[in-house]
Image (cartoon, rainbow over all chains, first blue to last red):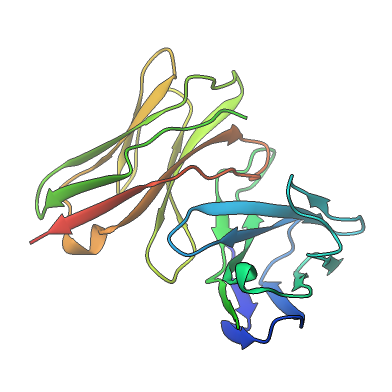
Length: 117
Length: 110
């Protein structure tokens, strides 16, 4: 299994500012994923981050708002830019699991609880 | 990607068996069915995954009929600590780019 550490675990930010969330994995992984979970809601995939290439964003999410870095196989960051209260959510990092040619599960971090005031 | 439909919530009592059914009518040939559990303030945790028939592990069983258009997660003898949201996901087993549905909020009562 993979152990994922996210920083910060929570933060309260002023609208118009930006926050960078870090995700550290204890093993090398090819793909990392960023999700958003709004209060009382399910998880929504934001983007897929592969090392050495630009992140792939899902419909409704753009790079200018959620820039992602993936400098190596164990680390990624997600920035929430120019924040508004609507960005208040839990942001989760996820990595692929399993071995061989087929991955059997995904591992998730504890999440970063963001409140924008 | 195949969309999933689950009951929004379920109630149960300690010691009972709980069965949560998920519909995925548009499942593709190479799609696997995976279930996750999420407690408040935690990330989702993998429970079980299957392709067809029945899969069992130390925490749950997964029943998948021949047409694979639905699946049932079975939790034997639930306890209060099983109170959580359970998500059914369907996707290509080659990577874990999962699209979460609404999930089922299970409330286990004493």
